[in-house]
Image (tube, rainbow, N blue to C red; front, side, top):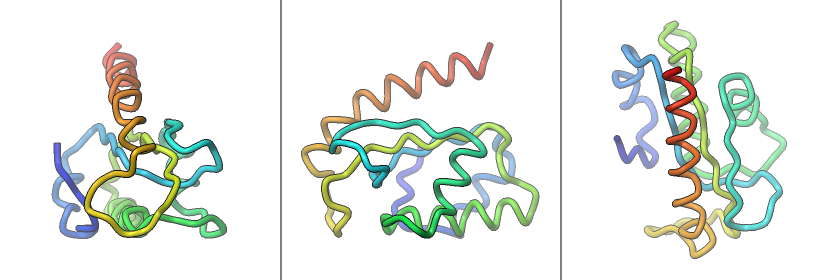
Length: 119
């Protein structure tokens, strides 16, 4: 597990040999704050690439990182983003209350996803 923050390209080495990638982040997908959404593979790529919606600072770096991995042909074939709907995408050092409330649900959903990927 890596707390990536906004490290972007410095994380590329971690993707080079990875078969699976799971990302947790707060974002905006038009739901109630605290809601959790899982986006896999192509849906993840489309969500991150969508420049018509408001993006978090983490998503900007993530888009760059995934783009670089795609160019180097090291994009993990199994990848997912667990996005927790934020009430506010501003700067901060701690998750907001709605995001904190969604973390447990996102973690449980990620465990189910890992089990599915392993079967």
